[in-house]
Length: 278
Image 1: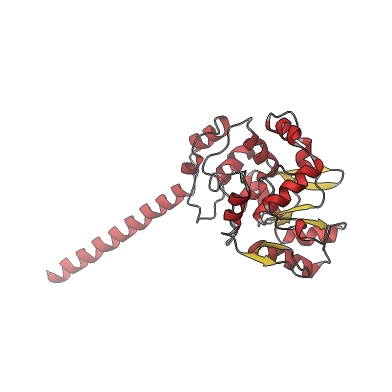
Image 2: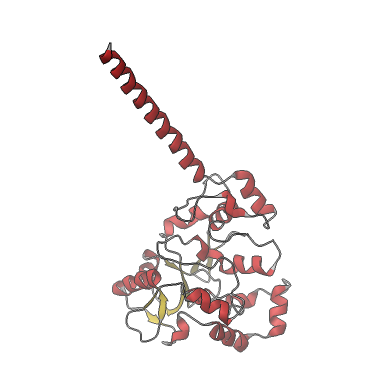
């Protein structure tokens, strides 16, 4: 009788463990799947708190491939930006032009939680949280550590030089971003960008506080051959700002992975750019 009771207890335990594992797996799966209704709201009413629609930021997130490009992109960046900007706002325009970087989920990469760093103090506060490394063969060109290491791997494959050879090609301060803006634009230009009347300038220079260079995830390079581009692409670096030919962004994924997050390929004058779908 005791033997039968022991066997029954053992079977009960096995069933309990099995059910628990199945239930846990279902929870895990649900955490990795964005809520389609919330994603839809992100597209139609971008002010909703989209961070509730996706997995934890500590989890590599691949969006549901049945969603369209725009929905996949917004579902992905909801892990990085607490609230998606409203459509037709300045912030949304910036997300459209420079938001590719928000698909980056590489370990060690730090991203701001919004599209604009308002001033020098806010920029420095963000930059104090990132780990930076000197790019090989340079004296003052710094990037986030993971991005720099990826670029250094590409440089081992092909000779790739900085555009100007100075620190401004790499991690920039708010003051440097502002100086570049003032070189090509002015307050009137900024007003036109904010009101949606001007966007072409964004392919030449980023408005103050909005450059990917502030985040240590962009670099200006001299790239002329397909072999150089291939070496960069193989190590997670891509051209993402249309008409800004020297500008390269560290996305941290292979080229085959980029469409999974809704990014779209655009070829202009023979140059392949990966851009946002919004």
